[in-house]
Image (tube, rainbow, N blue to C red; front, side, top):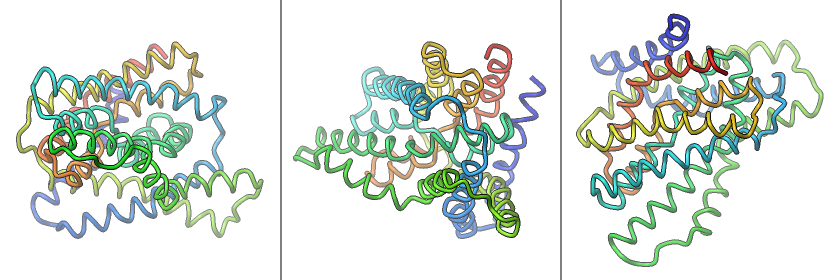
Length: 317
């Protein structure tokens, strides 16, 4: 337990530090937005590039990792959606937000630092391979379901799923994370080695990206807060922090995933809900309170749940 806490606690201490400085007004929202932009557009892609370009590659093909992760996410997503819609009797858009919040992990800002501390360079590699497809798959699914829910409430035709997919795929190539994955893979295949004059500053940026991401996340959580929708947020949090990692673990064991990959993959599945869920709620003007409450709630509770999952994985996997 102490080992697990030593891994998890520094990550969430930095988040809490960012939250505190935002709460007392030492840094304003513009500072947090600037830090988040640096992390997302510079630090994170550079870290991914450096990891893929130099890391020892996993024996499992990337699609084996995806085949274990995304069905587990679908189980949690469906459970959160159905519980909110049929048990709590929430309207269709709210049920969709609950489903998204039950499965959309904060893979970049929390997943990379946590996997790095727990599993080193190998953990970062697993997260990087997942990040290559995580955003387009999750965003496409969320957009299609939200537009369908809006049609149920307001009527009308809306966009076809094919048009939604094409629009999202058109934007994928411009995402900094995807560019980092592509460049890192291309450089690795080239067989070249970065000269020290280039490798040193890249390494410094990669190292700086982790604390900056966590600090920016803490400031963002202060802006969101918990403003109601507690029952639905609790249900989504249970699905995200307990059901989803359990489902991914069961699928990984059933498919015979390499043991060294199961730990990082399950830890990623146990991550708190990502800020992107709040962005989706804002985009569709649908229950932003539920989205923000789930993001904050899962981030706080995952201090404990991530430690418990690490203990379980260290003992049985």
